[in-house]
Amino acid sequence: MTHTEFLNWLDNLGQLNPVQQELLILIDELKQASYGENKEAVISHIDNKLRQMIAMGHRTVYPGRETAGTLLEAFQRERVQNAFFRSRTAVASIQRVLESLPSETSLDRMQTFYTRVMDWCQFAARDSEGELVPLSEEEKEAVRAVFNRLATEEVKQILAAIHVVNNNLSLATANDRYISATSSSVKTAIASMYNYILEPNERADPAETLPPEEEAKLSIRVGYSSLTFYAQKLRQIPGRNEDMKLLHRKAELLRDLHEFGYKSSPDVDCFIEALMVIPEKHLGFLEQAKELRRAVSNSEGANTVARELARNEINQLTNKCYQFFEGIQTDEKKTAQFMLLAHEELNRISSTFRTHCLPEYSIPDPDNKIASVLMRDADATEFVRQLYLMQRKITESNGEEKQNQQEILKALVDGGAAYYSNLKTRYSRNAFLNYLQLVGLDSFKTAKEAQQFMSFLSSLPKDGLNLFSMVTDFRLKVNEMEARDPSKYKMAAETARTVLFDLMARSTEFFSQPRTRVLCEAYKLDCEGIINNARPILEKHRGGKNVLAWCAMILTAGIIPLVVASYNKYAHGTFSFFPSTDSKKKVDSLQAAINAIPEPSEENNGTTASGDSSTPVP
Image (tube, rainbow, N blue to C red; front, top):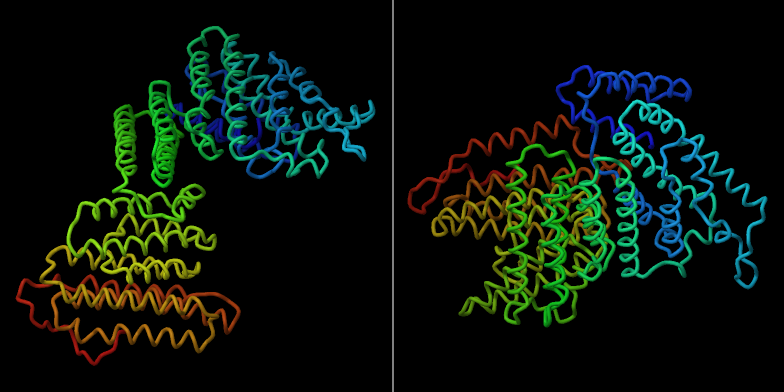
């Protein structure tokens, strides 16, 4: 057990015994005791505290969450970081690690485990013809010494402390603790093999790297092997028959995952993570998700966009279940409600998938741009979902507006494909997702507006995210105002729309050029001019005062700070906004002024007094 895992174990112990104050105090002392330079003193201190914990008797409930996932998590993490773990060699090595794990809780057996996990000859040097040259006995002995030293120095201390506890516990608890320890030992053995055994060229040999689909099969095989291994260990423990059956059931759920359409590592990893934490009574959700995934994969005539959208939606829902059950859930009512909604969402995905497969509801994607985006980037899921909603409205509508909506949809498809294909836009994905959830894609009036918005979004630098947040808020407020009474607020809403898209167009131009002092000043003046030019119209129509206030917020809290920061970077080499106190005063005072503005009156659509029109926007 590593230090981090030991601390996590203590956290779980505290969560399971929230009313035992004496135990909670001991847990805090144990955490403090686990730090220190003198390893012998640390182990002695931990040993004493654990003995005190055992003396509390049967009142203590120990963490009972499955530890079978430890190996899988380690393997998945290493596979992302090291190319070696995407190779056939890694699969064979991990299988040998599992087969070599000792079946006893003896510390000596745990220590000697490190000398038996590998076929040393497989990692020997290669001759000029590429053939393996077997290791000499001296080399084998050196390799064994490395593992022995690692076991002694990095693992033995914590294992020793836990072994002492095991001697004072029931056989069931001792074996539970052993399973946790062996999981950590497997992870250490794999990492040690990578760091100390393989030659550098073997660690990331492109010829050994698996194709994506084979890599997914690899994850399934390792997961199935590890779950089966731990089920066999539980067979040896009296009273753990139900737990053993549960692990076998989970292993069977995983065994044929590839046949159900899980053919990429992200898909498999998502399923495995949920499988490790979902309680037995709710495993039916994963069975239903598997069946839906197979139906989606095997659906004849399904277009690629519809299939990939359904795949991503299933993964997102599975991940939500993982996040829900990752913590210890004690509220049965809350859990039942969550799972009811999860099953309803699966049914919705199934229903909408069948609709999306109909030719009349398909998104126009002749070059497979959107399909390609969905295959490699789950961030696009909500965007494509809303494209389908637009297509559905277009299909069910008639008249001249239908052609206009088709042009808007095409502009969004082209702009979205460009946006999600550009890696530089990755940091703005969360901000765009927030926009989609709050505002949506159905408020564009023309294809030009859609093009301007997507160009602005794609041009956003990292320091432009605050401005985009202000744009989102502005758009939301205008939409809400217009929805209250379209006829009364028509002119104010149309003018606000013109101002917003002019500001976005000018900002797109600004972001595309190197920022000099002259350009920064010109950008600021142009934005002020766009707002001031609209002021006479806004002052004459109901809702105009609100729009002017929202424009002032964009300028004061979005555009001007960006200009100042850009100028500071140009002039002083330091990218900084207003001094925090000054900036806070500006925004707070402006927000207070906005909050003081009354709602538009119910009078006829005449002029409203809102100040001297000659006064420029602050």
